Image (cartoon, rainbow, N blue to C red):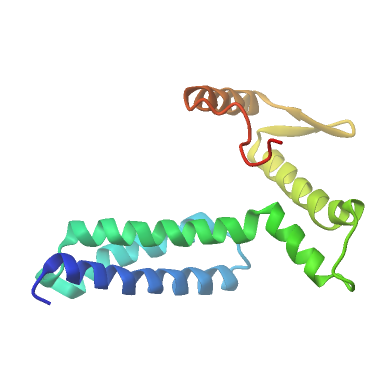
Length: 165
């Protein structure tokens, strides 16, 4: 290719496909553990390796911008599919025998397990601790909650957006 920017776009598309394939394979191999190091590590390897292979035919900064977009799309895809309660509920409804589930059924199959996993994450990170029948916030959790609230105020995020009626 004569134009380094166009060559960078093509290289970034190929590297983006490689990122998706590499992340998918490694997440499967590790049962979904260590997602952040996998997503970042594969991206860094490709960001460093692809331009070295292509040499001066590819504009590095164009490649980095295009490839950054591809990495963002992969992260968004995994985030939406793996962490979305709405999509998980939809999948459970589709799996049900008559493709219908009650609110209690959805709560038992999707919501409670997701909230329990998130609560374990808070406990494992030290932000919360088991307290009676529930959880209590720790000093670390207080600091984190304060920073989150400051960011929400700065961005003027008064609600969860899509879930407002």
